[in-house]
Image 1 (tube, one colour):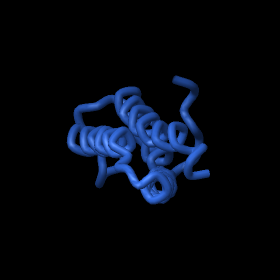
Image 2: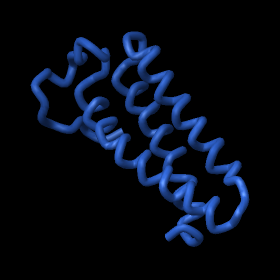
Image 3: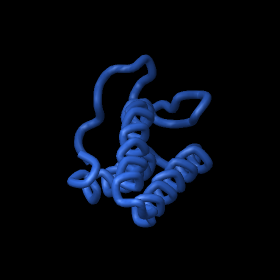
Length: 106
C-alpha cells in the first residue's frame, strides 16, 4: 500500500473513537455511499434491459457488504493495513458489476 493520505483531525496512528477505524481508512470509506448508489442504479438497469436477474452482480454486492461488515465488526482488532485491505476488497467487489455490465447499462 502507498503512503498514508494526509489530513483529518486525528494523527495517522490513532483511531477514530466511534468506529475504531484509522483516519485514512475512514476517508477511503467515505466514497462508499456514492459508489454503491452507482452500482445499484446500473444493476437495476441491466436487469430491466435484459429481463434477467444479474446473479453475478448480486453476489458481488453481497461480498462487498460482507467486507464492510468485517471492517466494522473487527475494526478494533484490525491494524491499519488490514482495514485498508478490507476497503480495497469492498471496492473491488463494487467495481466488478459495473465493469461487467457497463456495456449493457452505460
